[in-house]
Length: 181
Ligand code: HQG
Image 1: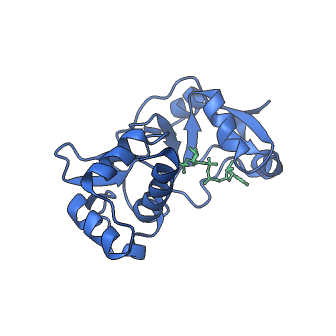
Image 2: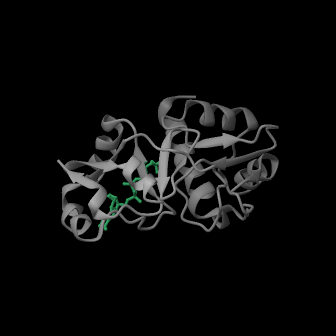
Image 3: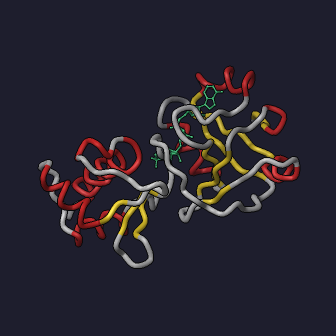
């Protein structure tokens, strides 16, 4: 399958597994999992048919490793980025000293006032790699890279989670932990 087709399928999978499972009439369990057979059946019922093999290819080739199969391969879920109410169940983890958040210029003023908020997602998303963070900010405008003093936050009692694809998640980042470069 070519890259464009894979991207289209991945986008639709994100919609179903993160935001609107009802679009194709599936429900996610409390941890965001859905049975793979149920998913592929529902996809084909809605004209978005994908075989198990194609699904595996989408998961394997996804640029940000957005999805995971359960260990037994029976279920699938998105690794992060949900807007629906689920509990991913990641272990808390100790973050590195500094994590990065890229945001478009137009949000900087509000962030300087209120800190980083999770907005429509379940968490604030932070990255170890500053290039990745900058690209995240570039999606919506001129990117500004913020440095988050994650270790200091953690020592002050803020919880962090890390996803299988190395995105660090936390509830909010108060302004005192943000360095605006
Ligand atoms: C901003 C993509 C005003 C925040 C990416 C961001 C990422 C505030 C936007 C992942 C604010 C929310 C997450 C405040 C934060 N006032 N704006 N107080 N606090 N913001 O998309 O971090 O493709 O929900 O800076 O690669 O941009 O989905 O979060 O600009 O890893 O897999 O509000 O989404 O991954 O936007 O992106 P988002 P994000 P996927």
